[in-house]
Structure formats: structure tokens, C-alpha cells
Image (cartoon, rainbow, N blue to C red):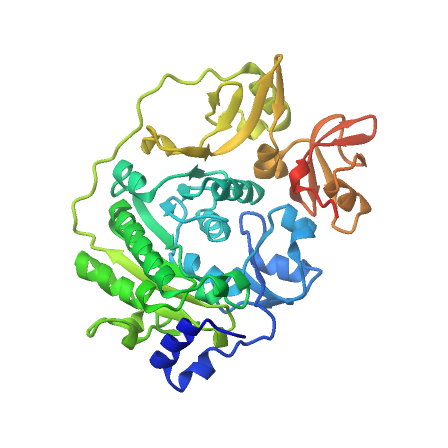
Length: 455
């Protein structure tokens, strides 16, 4: 592995003889892994039933490392949102946040969605998750991934974090900042990260990370917990960043991560004297991941809490009878669930989202897109079946070894064996793969073209 010259100069000066030890990768190929979506499946079930090689990850209880040459993207369970393909050490920060069902949680730099889906799984459909991404194209990728994972209680925003902090001060129990960084932990995995690296990039990322940290602090409620992480080794973005934040914010304390079970302590010579760097955590290449830094911060609980706020009172949405008729037939558990409309679209918003005023914030999606009404007929959305397909009263049950599963993922019609005529959820091993429409023993494929296995 060839490192950039400026990076080598800095790290050899900081580490001395330890450089070779810490920057020796544990495997010859980039580390690969998956994180189980516990909205769908338990880690034990996946480990027992998987048809590919898995080793429990040291970085997260719901994560596994996989063979370097295994590609998960074409596996039926990937399409069904049973797992998220994720570099092993990347699963660590979200697990450290200790999210519990019912909390309000914000992920401020959420795309592409691996850590966000972990937070959603921890909430188990209860509470509220705000998943924010500043870059519009990446926010769309985030939406697609959370839809695939069956997340029902997320507000996906495409915003500057300063606007979120101004709109929702002190509203969140947990905040994750997986900050944009210089990507030094990605050198082996992504050649572009090494090619574009320079000291100016490190300085820029440190400045951006500091700005996002300030906004995260404003969003956090008294007693709340913030986890800051990067996939870089640069002191300015890691220990020095956290030391500077704590100097500005005496209302925050640095939690001790020494008993987290993985990685190594932060480095004292990467921060000002007196900073308890050993309370932070680093994952080096030698530890089995590509590289991560993490710090866990708690806001004092004796601060004045922000007054609870609400969005503008609005008249109850007129729910189209076409949706009610459709839900009664196919999703009876959803009939009494609050719904909202936007033009011809019907959405199922997360419970409690009315407590966060949206105003002029750029909202990509709030909750689950149920479908649309056209010509007095309800056309269900893919998202509805990915979120609630296992509850559909009409299902076509496949297994991953059934040839119809591969055909379905290619976008082909398949024979019906268990589904009656009408709309049906197509499931693989009980996990949803979207919607079809059965007629005369055949199921017309409504799996989105952009998601199909076309190769």
C-alpha cells in the first residue's frame, strides 16, 4: 500500500516505530462486511440460515465480516433489506450511540444510509429518526436505502445542518455526526481518496466538521448523547477536533469508550495537553477495519430544556376512499393509521413528526409513501410493500433457491403459487421484495427497473 507523501510524513512523526504495526492491514484485501437489519431479522437467524461465509464482527453485535471476494448486492436478502453491505469498522459509531425505542434521533450526515439503518433498527419503529444529507443526489440514495430496509419512522431531509439547528433546537435525545472527512481510512479501499489527499483537504474537512458539531450540539436535548466519528486518522479532524469542541462547550463531557470491546485508545500527542484522548476510540488497519475514529459526548442534564414545539396546525387530511378501500383489502392493520396527502400521493407519516415544524426545510420524504390515486384507482408504491409487505393479506412466498426469485429480481413475470388474483407482496424467505399483480396464475412484475439484477 502506497500512502501519500504528506500523510506519511505526519504519521511517521506521530507514531515513530508504531507506524508499521498500526498500518499493517489485517487482511490483504479491503475489509468487507454486512450489518443485519434487525427490523427484518436477528443476527442469530441470519448466521444460521446464510448461504455465504460469515464471521462475527468485533465492532458491532449485529455485524459480520464476509469473504473479500463476496459481492452482496445481487443476493435476494440484500434486495429484501435483510442486511446492509458495510465496511466492518463503519458499523461501530451507530452502535455506540445507545439508541432506545421511542427516542428522537438525528443522523446529520446520513448518506448512503448504513449507519442510519442501524439507528432505525435500534428504534424498532418507535420514536422518530431524522436522516439528513446535504448533497441532493446522495439524499436520494439515502431515501432508496432506507426504503429497501423497511424504515417507517424517518424524516429524510436535504439540508444544511445550521438550518436544522435553527428549526429544532434541543429536540433530540441522540445525534450522530459521521463527519465528512479526508478519508484516510479509505486509502486502500478507494484509490481516489489517496490521490486527492493533501493538507488543505484535511484543514477544510476539520473546519466543516467543527461547524457540523456546533449544530449537533444545538440540536441535542439536555442529557442527550452525541457520537462524532470519522474514517480518517488526521488529528485536526479527530482528537484535536473534540478537544476544541469541549473547550467551547463546558456543558459537554467526554464519555469513556475504553470498555467498548474493540480498537485502541485515542492518541494523546494528537491533541492539546490535558485532553483525555484515551477516552476516545480509534480503529487502525491492524485492528481489522479500514480505519475509524469515535468520540462520545454527553450534554449536561441540568440545562434548561427547549420548549416543545409543533408545526403549523393543519386541517386533517382528507383521506382518499381509494386508499381506505385498498388498505382494507390488503393491509387492514394500516386502515386506522394516520395518513397525509400531497397532491395525488398518499403518505403514512411517522408518529410524532408533527412535533417538528418543517416550515421551509427541504423534506425528501416523511414516513412511508403508500401510493397515489389516479382515475379513482389506488396505485400502490414500492415503498409500501417494502415497509409492510410481511403484513399483506395476499403474498407470493418464494425462497432464495426458487428459480422464480432470480427471475423476479430480473424484472420478469413469474408463476403464482400462493397469491390470489390482485395486488400481492412478493417475499423471499418471508422478507419483502416489493409488489406484483396476480392474474390467471401469473404475477406481473412491479419491481422498480432501477433496482433489478440486469446482469
